Amino acid sequence: MCDHARAVRSHSRLAACVAWRWAQTGTWSSKGAAARWAAERAPEPDVLLAALDRREGDGARAFDEAAGRRFVAMVRDGLAD
Image 1 (cartoon, rainbow, N blue to C red):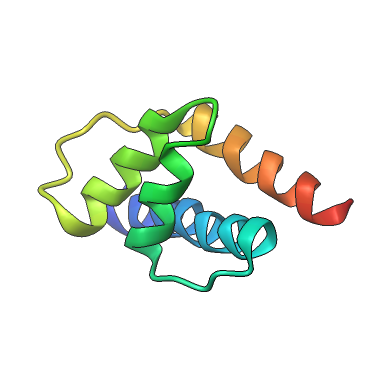
Image 2 (spheres, rainbow, N blue to C red; image 1 turned 90 degrees about the vertical axis):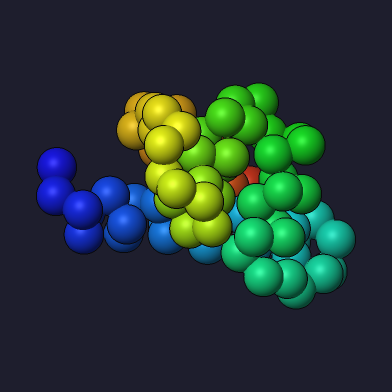
């Protein structure tokens, strides 16, 4: 997978964090703040911390693509209710 594809996938996880936080609390926040908030609540926080590391850190944390898809699906399904 190329770097651009990794960045897009990471961005989608962070955007889902923003949407989830907004839906749950009414608080609009940066992707970083939303990812930290979501990591405290998500069933698989490591994928969010890895996405955040790709944005703010050195990108060395392992990124589980399947867990990322599950997180986005969880948020999407929650917003659809």
